[in-house]
Image (cartoon, rainbow, N blue to C red):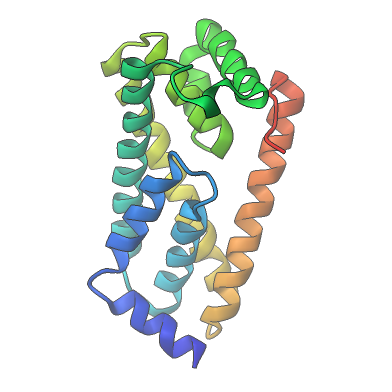
Length: 199
């Protein structure tokens, strides 16, 4: 029953549109399952051939770049203290961290932040507010989005290849694996770079 629902979801003409919206929304609302959606679709693609893996990566890349660019524009036009949530102590700490890192290693920070949800939001807003060049920002954000989309989708596809004939299990295992790797990367970066983690 669940497998039939998953097959129908992947065959829907709206499947990639829904994934696009989740990844786009994830740029601002880190509670949305953007990463999980890309990983799940990667697993479903490897299990049933639909949607094509290349299409998943292309759509996820486009959505990620669009979301990151939107955060950059908000930072550039609104700044970093217009709304109350921006003035919360934890958010201020993250924004100060992002500003200090962008001043020293902008390209590295922009690229790696794409893989860490809360850091991604702080870095993209701060990049806009501190006037990182738009062309430079978009070039780095585009490369990072492509790497991120391929990484998320290929985790799902790899798990599905290891668990043939079990798309539901492949989706669950791949999403848990992707989330676990994400948390490990976040903890590692927090230790190495002194990044404040969202609790």
